[in-house]
Length: 338
Image 1 (cartoon, rainbow, N blue to C red):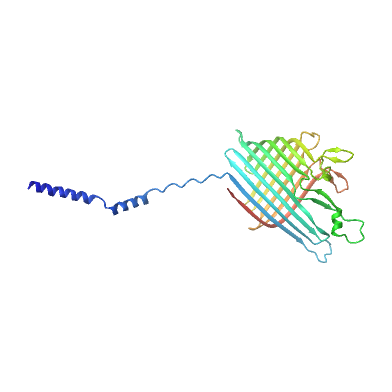
Image 2 (cartoon, rainbow, N blue to C red):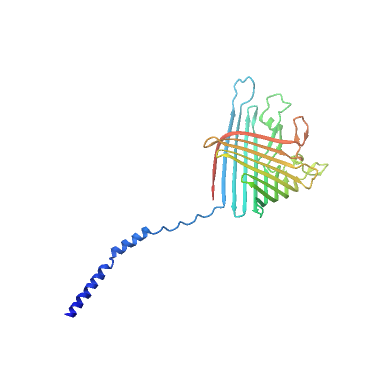
């Protein structure tokens, strides 16, 4: 009897223990619930981006039509295109900013049966900087390059003709003023970059080496190249310069549709201490009036004491060169990060 009692008790305890063991289904449900209640795995951190890229393209067209207009004038058409590309790098204490500006445009007027170029410019600038222990001050290296795509002429009126001037007569009367690498300016300067505000920077490079190239022989005298043969009136095609350069840049963003950028650059040549500094001052106002249309006002001012200009009074000499463009047309901007 005692053995039977013990056997029954053992079976009871075993049954109770078995009843407490979870089934396979219960185990699966518990695991699923634990996964649902558990914390999600952290998302991987985004890869850092160091480049900021932008590209602005514009095409501008203008037209004037006159019919029996008492005040006079000529029908004319203008077509111009431009590119403004930026590639800027920033990582830690180092920056590297690059900008390429290219403009090209034509004018056709009914009084001259030829296409006349009215806009032509290539300007490349690259600025490198590394922070110093002084706030807002960086060591810097600055490179810039200026030239144009094609020949540019002044078109005088053909003379000594008994009939209406033809296209060939107009072409024969034109006077070459500039061309590709005629002139071209290249400078590399080492110095300091001061950026007290995000919209303003001042670069001073007391060690600046420069090269001026005038490939077209007939233009070398005009752009102040050195005379090497007085009898043959032969001038050097290249002039080396060494001096100090200062550049002030400002970029005012009034709102997302209206911006104003300006740059003033001065170069003083140590090799010609009695000659005034060369000055370049560029301005651009960009007003985006609709999604794909914008109004642009741009000016370029140059003072180069070595360049011989044809003045309004018929004389020649140094002076201020100035041009201004007011344009409305199609524009498209691409901006982003890589």
